[in-house]
Length: 331
Image (cartoon, rainbow, N blue to C red):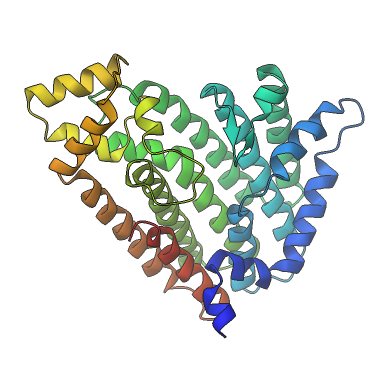
């Protein structure tokens, strides 16, 4: 019991779904193969097998099992979700000119940008093939809409990330696109494939949406908060001129001198030694970090409230615990 209590909730969920996850991994390996372009499995394997929690496909499996599903297609949908996620990571690393992902060199660094983009396109195509095999138009609608929303969120972020006019509503729209859309689609399709009622499917969507938003807010907060093994250094977002929620809150309360500082460092990108320390001081002055933390906690509570509407059992408890765990990193 002590060992179980010490285990992270997503790890407990992984153990609970181990057989299903093995099937997902086998399907991923089979579908990322290519007879004619060996670079495709090379690039895909580099990222897929690099570790990571595999939280998104687990959410699909968990939602389906919680709703009583006993067929084979939750595995197809979980693999679909992972392919979409992997494709977006490949594309994101090119857009962000990243050199590291999960503590390893990125695919675009090891190969090149062209390979990363084209392999990402291949994985998107594979994901649509997997979707259609379920024979469910509703599943196809949900996941295709999510793919479009993810792309839309990434494009919106290009224009919003360094614009001081970006407010919390635009930030939330970006987060819903780049992160929460796949979380909510992952949980929703699990309920749909299980034939769950409308109220349960809606609750699953609401859980995934709120969990994804909380997850991203925490990630953005940790960039300034520190103290978590994210593979990021404190201030990475500041150095990359990303206007995330803590800075948006500080900008909203800034006087003329402070606004000039944010304009120089974020909008114009003219950063000097000591600017990160000044940024942290302004975030603390305006209580932006604590207010951001409270928003993450509020979204986690929304996720838990949605989960409370679903069938009781071990899976429901683990999904509830995951919502708590996401925000525990900044408690």
